[in-house]
Amino acid sequence: MLGHGDWQANALKLRPMIKDPFSRLGLDREVLTVSQLNGRARVLLEDVFSNIWVEGEISNLARPASGHVYFTLKDSGAQVRCALFRNNAARVRQALKDGLAVKVRGKVSLFEGRGDYQLILDTVEPAGDGALRLAFDALKEKLSAEGLFSAERKVPLPAHPQRIGIISSPTGAVIRDIISVFRRRAPQVQLTLIPTAVQGREATAQIVRALKLADARGFDALILARGGGSLEDLWCFNEEAVARAVDACVTPIVSAVGHETDVSISDFVADVRAPTPSAAAELLAPDSSDLVRRVESLHRRLVMRMRDRLMRDRLRLEGISRRLRHPGERLRQQAQRLDDLDMRMRRAFERQLNTRRERLIRLETRLASQHPGRQLAMLRQRLDSLAERLPRAMREGLKSRRLQLHSQMQTLHVVSPLATLGRGYSILLDERGQAIRNAAQTHTGQRLKARLGEGELQVRVEDNHLTPVTLSLLD
Image (cartoon, rainbow, N blue to C red; front, top):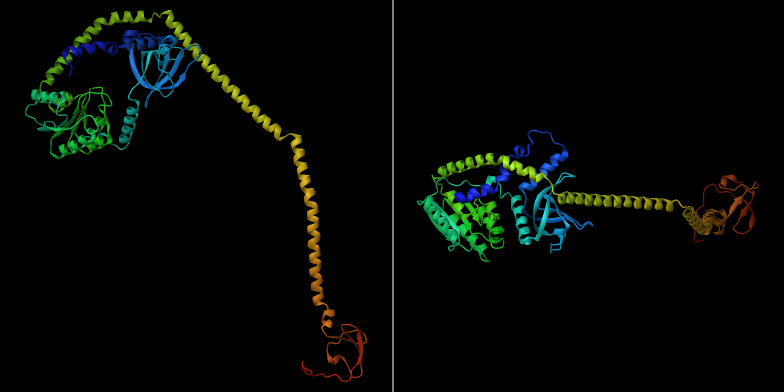
């Protein structure tokens, strides 16, 4: 919790951000040109974000001949363009490259020529805990996809808890701060400490066991707490086993790991995330004095608003004076515009050169495919192939015809009457040379000619038996 003085100090630091920019810059009374809009937007950005630190990953790194350095600083959800001018770039010891995680310091400005929002940097430093941060983001994305962070899984905290379990280290300021808050705000609440290690190799397993034990003991609510530290010190609260143990708890649980700026996976899975252990105790031990503090807070806000109105004219005058641009600033803007035009011209030239080169390659390919020498070579190759195939085709044709003729001669010999006569048969012919097929065609005493396999015989019919006579083949 911030004291009265701390709250006022922080409010004064944020005063430039909560003033009405339209009244301050006079934007509610005039119509601006684009140049005027960009100029006033640049002044407003440089006024509010004059010296800030930003962490991200470098991409699209460019180093033109002017010595200035330009790149895009990005994270998983957004990106911003950055400019590091030559004098500041010479002081950067780390070799800049795409993919490098860095922390940068500078002011937010506007490149008026394009209306681009950008960071003008004076310091670039390497960012630590890169590997742990990647593992953190990967597990966060995995568990989020499984729905462990969804609002439907959150259990509301009890309005008037009586028994609260505290999962933390038994030593250190964390447990003392929690006990102090409950003694001051709700001394009737019974507190039970479930001790566990909160750092080191054994911490993960001990935290998981403590969560299971506390959930089984029927507390009204649980507080998972640890003091601040580096990302590595707090890593046991980013382990998947701890996150799933928190999710498995039926008892409402408040995660209070580290300082207000520290965020862990356990914070996302728990039912409620508290910025500090003391804040977790205050969530579970509401106090009637909250109303009094709220009235005091409203009173302080009213006083600050009145002061803001009294200071508005002075701040407007200061804003007008800041718009009087130093010649060096204009020169830097022009140098950046020149670098931008130079890079655009180089990219356009390279694109045009590549287009002409590709077209020349296509034309050369078409010319080569239509060259007469290539056509003549193909025709000559085809003619040689036909000249080689012609004699072979003629030989194969003659061989096929010769085999066909031999087959036909054999067939003709098989059906020839001469072949039958050669086996011992004869043919009888009458005077007219007609073959005798039936004994009824002859008469006794008739002269016939018998045609044999070799030679002929003159025979005379002694008798013609109209009834066939069976002859023995053995006679």
